[in-house]
Image 1: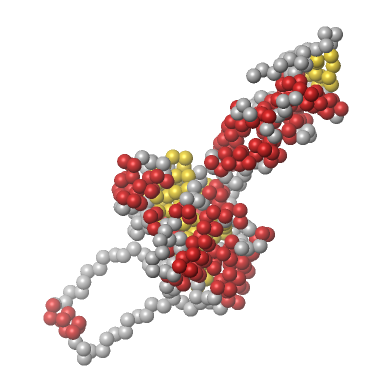
Image 2 (image 1 turned 180 degrees about the horizontal axis):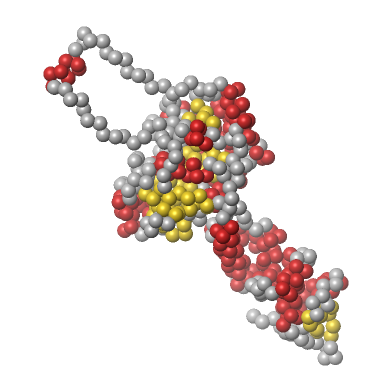
Length: 492
């Protein structure tokens, strides 16, 4: 199912959509200096996708707790033991609850350890609970730093390991990492490198502009354009967003951060003498400053009850037209990859099982997504491409032949369709060598065996005329090939 959520508009005012299903397979990296609108972008993404997929937000500043009231997220305060956090994470996956993991009030070292325990709990969930989940990490450079800084080596190691697992191995467990950072140079490269989708915002340092341009495939002279981006404007690229760099203005949000953007406030209208008296007068009692404390953590039993009662996200309605266009593009890319194997001089004589690992690599490079054909489907596609009968159109009689071929083993379907096409067109019957090559063999005897196999099972009938030339009949369709020498050499 294809679900496109609207994240904003392009320069022409047209909506820009993010393919949520593709995002689950390819991950997202957001970069921008403080004030560029990263948190606004993440909030837009979370709000638009809340009804379609489970969400977990690692929130170092408490910016996203407002999602709880509007969208039903469970807020989990991180001031807990490692065992508690791990158990909570397992129950989150079991009950498919969307949560905000609030790290506000902890120092940097404790934040890294708590986030690592939470991520590891999500990662180590039982296989039957590997439901799709967006895992959003704000200020990701805090949890996957490129350097040590002032934190302990142990905290850095366990946090970086958890972030690496999320971005590198999380996809198979249903975890889709969405990480946001102020500076690419401060983010560990092995974590950033696993993202295939990018939203790059305003940045000023040369090293960050260069890395952003490199990730987007832009020329070096275009890197300075990141300085000119307005707040809330980003450049998008990736299979879930756009095949080419695309400027995006992020749309409005329904919830607000507790912190918000700073606003100007004029100083009080007092004379200098009066202000001096207020500052230097030790006799007047000072008003105690309000102590900023995060709310006390909810009892674990209460949280577990909330997780069990949290409603699962309702599936969204896919756009049929967009889904058809996406599927057509995906099929075209798969056909192109398969034909590359057929064009390789050595590939026709390698089994489908031997070629399948290379096929998977090509699919990853071309960013096919999560719906990669399995070995049986790849074998069928390869056999049909080798036989040269793909793309025959939607003729009703031909579709009957395709349906009949589907009952044969995958590696034989292309050979049968190759013979069927010759019969439908009244063309000469393919020789033994041509049949063997379509099957992936160098031996002409393999071609004769294929005919015997299909004839014994009633798919076709082989006859020879008085000159010894072979004729193949298809009783189910009334088709017949023209006579041809079975020992004729295959073309090429």
